[in-house]
Amino acid sequence: MSKVKIEGNASGTGTLTISAPNTNVDRTLTLPDGAGEILTDASTLSSSNLSGALPAIDGSALTGLSGGGKVLQVVSVTTSIEESTTSSSFQTSSHCQANITPSATTSKILVIANVQHYQAGSGGVDNEMHLRLIETNSSDTTGIQVERTYGYSGYGVLHQGETTLTWLHSPSTTSQRTYAVQWKYQSGTTPVRIQDTGDGTITLLEIDGS
Image 1 (cartoon, rainbow, N blue to C red):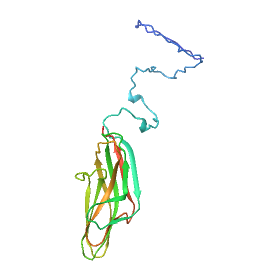
Image 2 (cartoon, helix red, strand yellow):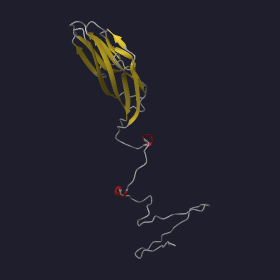
Image 3 (cartoon, rainbow, N blue to C red):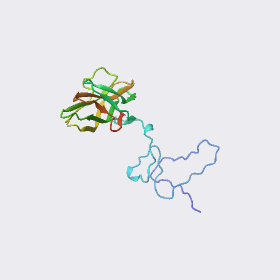
Image 4 (cartoon, one colour):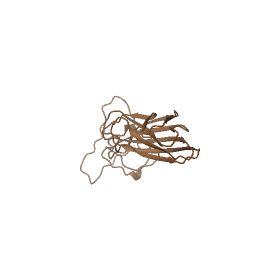
């Protein structure tokens, strides 16, 4: 039978008291089979002494982190509904748009849109279309969009492409925001279309800005 030995320290003058808790249940405390010190809530554990696989961490339970940068929520919408225009004014897509409600006024919204665009060639006439992102809740369109211009040569061919637009926006509100793709016909003789040759996708990521 192995034994438990309690040995005093010849240099110490204090008394070490081992106290039992207030319990009516019999319990067994099993000591580790190895040399070392018992850790308490006042102990410091070196990271070099940690080994083995750590359990999975639930990001929703993390608190007290500073510096921002965490992704707080993600909203994504995919549409295959074609939309067309011959207007020279920006048109807001009714389908390639998404809503998000920021959880804090300091949050930033990262908008990522993948747009399929198409225009039929028109016999030697140069064609041109514009694409951009917009926050539809605001009437101010100055400086809140990312715009791309596409020019196509004509000669009776089909002009199609796929474009990714990104925009990091600071809405400074906790009210619901709507972000959408806008496009317009700039020149040529045929309509410009989006979602004609494939799906359009818009994704919104709320980023902790604190």
